[in-house]
Amino acid sequence: MNDKKGLTIGVTITVVAVVLIAAILGIYRLAGGQWTSPPPPPPAAYCRAAMDGETADLTIEQAGNAAIIAAVATQRGLAPRAVSIALTTAFQESGIRNLDYGDRDSLGLFQQRPSMGWGTKEQVMDPFYSSGKFYDVMVTVDDWETADIGDVAQEVQRSGFPDAYDKHVATARLIASALSGETPASWSCLVRDPAPADPAQLLSLLTQAYGATIHAVPMAATATDPARITITAASETTAWSAGTFAQSWAKQTGVTKVSVGKSEWKASAAVLSGWVAGTTPATATQVVIPF
Picture (tube, rainbow, N blue to C red):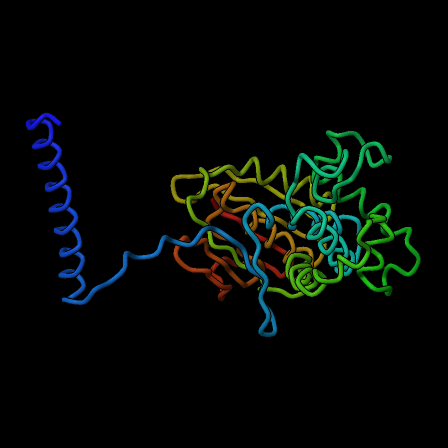
């Protein structure tokens, strides 16, 4: 080896070693003379249903899809049990993700097959359509309102693994109760790195999801107030469902706060904030969503 080249490599290695040692000693001193590990990364955005000491977490992607599944049931006047059945199925079929692939030609949240009459590829990839199509078939199942949830899911899906749905039932029930509004103030989301405020997107989603069960009015920002959407719902339960829908889509649409009646939730990137007494005057069937 050339002596000059070897010397250069040796100097470089020495410099790197010195820098690393200095960094390590710096961490040691900053920790008050005690060794410490670098701080953990901040938690990813997610949503949680919590009630009676039980919790169930979903990613933001899953939460948005689950909120659509619950809202479509609300629009159709179906009981929260319908949402439990649909979420049980979506957990097993796709992990509540809108997959563009699957076994043979299966697609979407429920892995519906266009070749089997579920709709076109574009339709079954639309969460609103696929949720509605699932409910269309579900309500034709005998005793769907009282039969075993896994059995009902199997009747709709005709899966090659009929017992696979059972393991998701408890979690699906918990989430369905929160998103359907059956259990108020039981849903919260950690919102990290939210998108810019987009009231038009959320208004479009809400209108498609809930139809005539809500009346949503957008208000542009003023010199003193941010843009907002005010909802008057057909019932208090529907109001809570719409409120959880707005939470679930807060990261994608820039929602900063949701008020349902006299309760309020504020979006936070640091903690999973709960519902508290609100300051926005509203009736039990009103939802106010600032951006």
